[in-house]
Length: 494
Image (cartoon, rainbow, N blue to C red; front, side, top):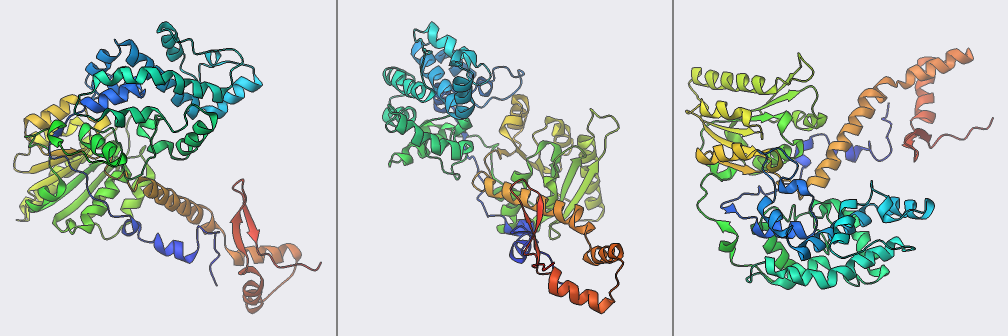
């Protein structure tokens, strides 16, 4: 019996391409940091373009490690010109991001910006008013308000040049605030189309004069990343990296160097505190570079409440993978940390007993609870892979002080992130359709039920002929509302 196709999702070519998921992931280069990079410039730019307060550590618990410097925020927030630019940019981002919803409120419910608190930052409007800009006006269209932001920015952005050092080419920074023909409705509409389509690729989804490339990643990660990209977009090159790095941070390294010096290695993954896409990307990259030969085991310890994306990695039978799923005795308490630690020590002990000890380990987790494991296993060399937003300052400092190599993987797989997420979702959809729906559909049973209802009979040969001639030509497609529909049905005469 031939196989039914499920639209384009289940054709033979797509099925074959997804049979071994990890083999089809794009190879990427692991992002490494050789020096401790500064964030002075990106912190100032982030303040001016209106990046949310929480990324400066405001509103977070004290030991969190913010992306940008709180001291920069406090300094610039005392300056009227910087405040005006920041609040205008915050306002413009919200107007562009929520354009349709705000437009509806203004036209259907006859509201103005100062009466839509869920969509428009009222604190920005109030701060602008206190600084002498009465932004809200009667009978003003939303697209005209966006033009107003551009016009208000014109005299105030130049006054913020004083915050940037003289060695930076100020026009490149200034250009971030002014789109082409920004003083016209048409110019803003053109920029809005790019923003709407690629919003996730803009830095923290802030609306600026930028045409993003999915290979850029987080352009505001640090000064060493931001300035070369900024100069390149202006057909220039930034040369003096000594101004944006602090050399001598030996604690930061890369997996290739670590693995080259290692004997046998175990990779321990805390699935509760690691991004599945990034971990898949890392393992794919190591495999492409022939570095997995030294890996004795990839230990995944998961919690019953975490993401099913880990299935994509577990299905690769070529990996030395062990997957352990923990359940919870109490709903609010996970057992992943304890389980991973115990299984890790068992691997170390068994390797010693076999006379082929594991001498190196990679911990993929941002959880500082694994520090005792590192501290109490001095015979093993560790590399820690962690995520910037999830790593506390205390843990970062502990690793630094003890010369434990680590690096941040936040934008490691940014270039292929959209494609990877698409593949993960597609594989899960196919799994859901095949395992939970198609597996319950048997055409011989359907035909026999139909014959029974009609009080008719066919022998096996007649059923096979009927199936081949009339049924297998049909396909299953999907309507716009997601419902399954039969396609290519035979024409009926009666």
